[in-house]
Image 1 (spheres, rainbow, N blue to C red):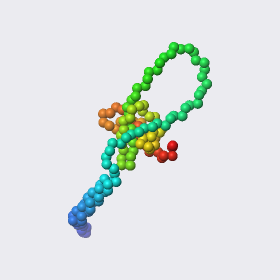
Image 2 (image 1 turned 90 degrees about the vertical axis):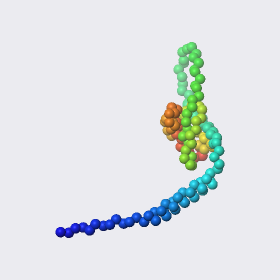
Image 3 (image 1 turned 135 degrees about the horizontal axis):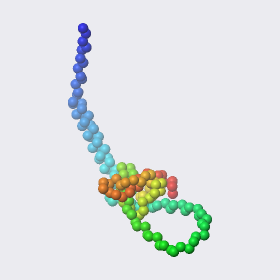
Image 4 (image 1 turned 120 degrees about the vertical axis):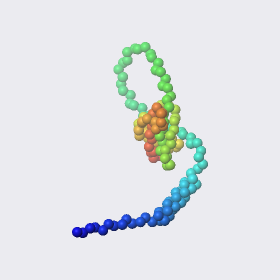
Length: 142
């Protein structure tokens, strides 16, 4: 009767793993130093939002209206919402005042153009406001 000889598992070279771990730690620290050197000091970022004017719809011929008592529309209250703005190093949350932008609307934030790609709940826990998720657009829109 034939039996297979069991193969021994190769031993791990722990010294090599330690050297690799040290090299990775050095690389991470060098990258962090380089990142700190390239980034300016942490200053508050000024958020400037300029909305693109919506194109005016073509006037439709209206039938003669019947005289009705004039009703004053209630002024729209300024509501707060959250902007999810992508940046080179991650993202930024902003809370401007005004009406929540519509999907597909273009906004200008800090001299860059963004498009509202999605509206959803705020990413902040316990926050009931709406959030406009933006996507960067090239500067050719101007």
